[in-house]
Amino acid sequence: MAEKLTAIKGMNDILPPESARWEWLEDKVRQLMRRYGYQNMRTPIVEPTALFVRGLGEVTDIVEKEMYSFEDSLNGDKLTLRPEGTAGSVRAINEHNFLYEGGKRLYYIGPMFRHERPQKGRYRQFHQVGAEVLGFAGPDVDAELILMTAALWRDLGLTIGQDVSLQINSLGQPDERKAHRAALITYLEANADQLDEEARRRLHSNPLRILDTKNPAMQALVEAAPKLIDFLGDESLAHFGAVKFALEAAGVPYQVNTRLVRGMDYYNLTVFEWVTDKLGAQGTVCGGGRYDGLIEQLGGKPAPAVGWGLGMERLLLLLQEIGVEAPSTAPDAFAMVFAGTPMPIVLATLEALRAQGVRVVLNPAGKDGPASPKSQFKKADASGARFALVFGPDEVAQGLVAVKPLRDGGEQTSLKLADATDWAHTLLTPATAS
Image 1 (spheres, rainbow, N blue to C red):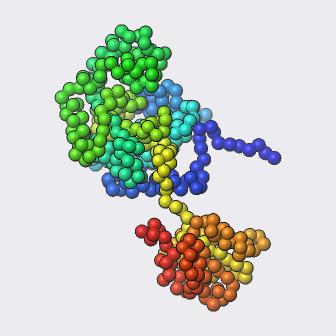
Image 2 (tube, rainbow, N blue to C red; image 1 turned 90 degrees about the horizontal axis):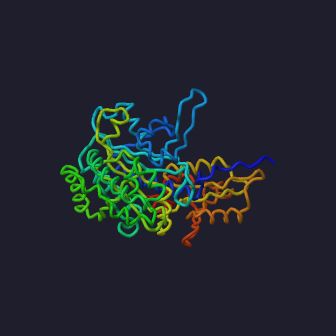
């Protein structure tokens, strides 16, 4: 026997019935995006490595440690499996001059890749929903994006403040961050004996990320560090104030977390994260912010932008943890065909029912013909269907099909095959009918 091949560690197959939960979540996302006027975009999963080095920052964890990068053996190009969606989205916007007619609201759903130690809620291939708004500079768009995520939580059955909580911050503008960076380095150098190895490595390359340390021994040190918000000018403070005012007006509670910096270098002004305490260390469910300089940084004409990304695996884990279940994917009806029944008539009837929106599954015959009635009724019950459609040779010869309720104890009836389009609606579950 040939050796069995398996998936790469940290890259998971998603099979039924689990895949139904994913489809349900994707449907909820698409419905949300339509309500807010966002259009779908799709970009390659492989991009030039330089895109992420230039876009995310050369000294970020993603670029330094986590990217799947390789050299194309055909032409020597340096390529990378995308570790996040924003840089590729901006590359596509620039390449196609997509802002020529004005600002855009876009979203995407797809796999991302990071080479890190797999653990619950953190995988080497993971899936992201991303929303990007390009060409609009005002704080109203920042607030709209956050309110959109709040609407998604409600659609999914999550309680804000209990299952997920919102943290926000402002990173200001580059000159403000530069002044804060100098003060932060001075402070950390004066306390160098309290820095761990990772912090010492970041001290002069990316000191802002030290504030995001999870090392318990450094918490008091970073809590007392100079805060970026104290270095913001009037315009940055006004922008942040407008975002907070909009959230308050919409009744969305938030906490200002002055240590929130996010993991990519392209952010400015508003940043935010939705966090939970129900998934252990993997507490961030969704995060994003404004990245006004990235479009120009990647070769486009200067234009403001803001967006967020959401990890689907982590969100599905959270929904599972609090007991939110996706709707049943059981069929409306299960079709049973007994020996001697003309199959073309059966298939034509099932097609007529499906054309009316009925979800019906046919129990296929084996090489020796249809299974026994007992076996088929057992499969019908296990399918979760509300009705069994019993196609026996005698009934079909009379132009009839027996319809047997499987869930509510109702009486079996016989209905005319020729009138299938008329009685199809009686098989629909309330969810299907709506």
